[in-house]
Length: 270
Ligand SMILES: Nc1ncnc2c1ncn2[C@@H]1O[C@H](COP(=O)(O)OP(=O)(O)O)[C@@H](O)[C@H]1O
Ligand SMILES: [Mg+2]
Image (cartoon, rainbow, N blue to C red; front, side):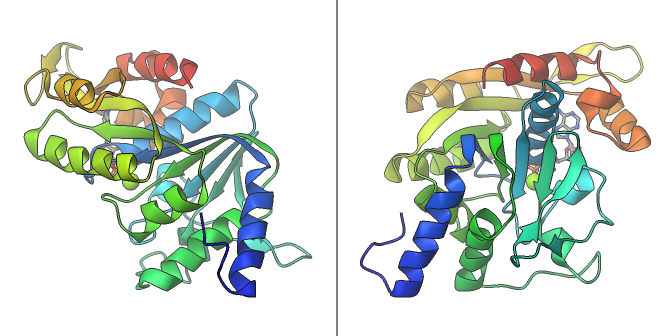
């Protein structure tokens, strides 16, 4: 939490954050020590599935330097507007689904965000507390790799956020994710569990399944850290391609794919 002994400004900010957080029921931070392991993919598809079930869902992008949510939701051309109280209005992606990403604030699609610590922390606080979120059943927060300012801002300001950790079975990913788990422990954040992504490859030609990166590394990591191993997700290039073609998350574009079926099982656990 932000210190209660801070300036008036900080205390007002803390109040605003607390008020906003009361509008969100379940909050999940999708994180990993590593980039490119499927955090955004998991966040987007779980959010989509929950929204389709009729829940009100928010997707918050705190990957300020590599904001992929707009791309992953096929909403690159949206721009954020403000309401009569000066609050940012999240982009509505579908019925029951709202997205907040810095990408929608940029003047150009390729514009780089070159912010340092305090500016980044301020932006994330603003995305939580100065944004016209509706009441939400689920808030999914998509994070950058590692345990820097962005992730720590969420861990410190959303005490009841649950971490959904994504890794691959590759040893480099496992050793980086172990550091993220150490950070969660230090911050006393509840870890909901570990998802192993890209555990096998579904052949786009024959549908056959080939294991990737060796087996067992993620289960071992989860058991050593004392957290739940939630599921393994196959790499399904055909489903990914269909998502791009239909411009909709893969659970919608490829409803019968083995990857979608696993994501549906995972969503049921949330
Ligand atoms: N299970 C999967 N099957 C097919 N493609 C995947 C899968 N998981 C991730 N990808 C693809 O891999 C790339 C990286 O995934 P992404 O979700 O952006 O990772 P991160 O957010 O951890 O950096 C993206 O192009 C995504 O579409
Ligand atoms: Mg990402």
